[in-house]
Image 1 (cartoon, rainbow, N blue to C red):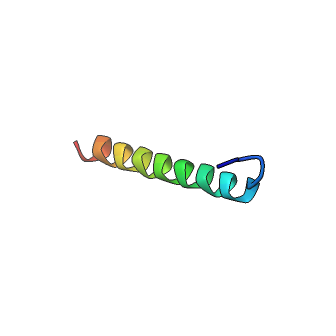
Image 2 (cartoon, helix red, strand yellow):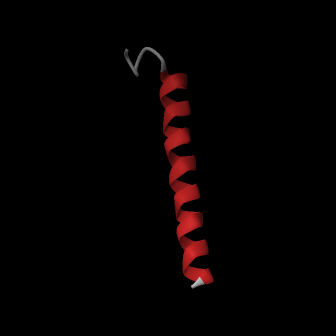
Length: 35
């Protein structure tokens, strides 16, 4: 497995992490607003 050999896979993986992180952030903000 080589990220340099498959940059598209690497970027899609990074985007997945960013999206999941953003979702967690939104959920955290939602929790803060709700309380």
